[in-house]
Image (cartoon, rainbow, N blue to C red; front, side, top):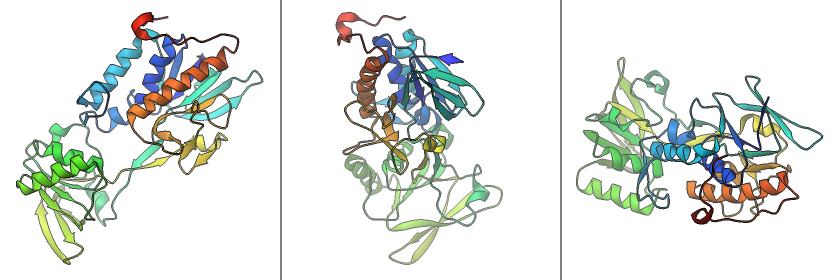
Length: 335
């Protein structure tokens, strides 16, 4: 049995930052994650993708941010159960919880912080007849290492931030980049939209709007995609090495749905006072929670984690008075 003060479900950026904030007030943390390494989506899906809205870092690679968060929390000796999924929960008479993973590992804690990002997720796939044939043979749904596409021809489909950001990034890596979007307007940041349009005007990328990839062709590996214009009712074939549909992820809470939490579809409803759920002792922070005005940004998750651990301390030590101390005064003292 693994015992800790705060059991964190999810070792993504919010879960990792919770370790630091909890450590400052002498609370121990243990993290459970179904992935084989810490970092969540940042490590698993886009470790080489630059992030621009982390305070103090004009630009930082997702994988580098994960490494920094791990280093930041290291003085507080967090524990990890990796490659296992939190499965069942049991509440004991003393108001502590026992969480058991799919591999039977048991964890006991008075506080649970669910920081599972989008939960169990899978990429949204376009409806193409022979898509499965080319998966791992020219069709990728995530970009882990952009060097894979150096000097290659790449077709990206999508209209959100991920599609725009990777189009901009790969324009300097791949030999040819084509972006296909089924609408006229993009859903991503205005600055990214302007950069993509500028690249298209300069001839550095091919841009197809009101269009979609309608067919894939090739022998053993992908060699050609057909792009159909939905307005002009015309089609062109474009030679390519890779087709990358970036239509987002389909979030699924998985076993957490059975934990008696108030849900809003695939998100957990919380009280913004401290990001507590309807179950006393269970909190939810980061992309997995939901409240009015919610913004799914890493920096917002950091804020949620900070307030959550203050509430967790009061729950664990109801008779102690917690005084906020600035780290510029108190420093960072390990256990």
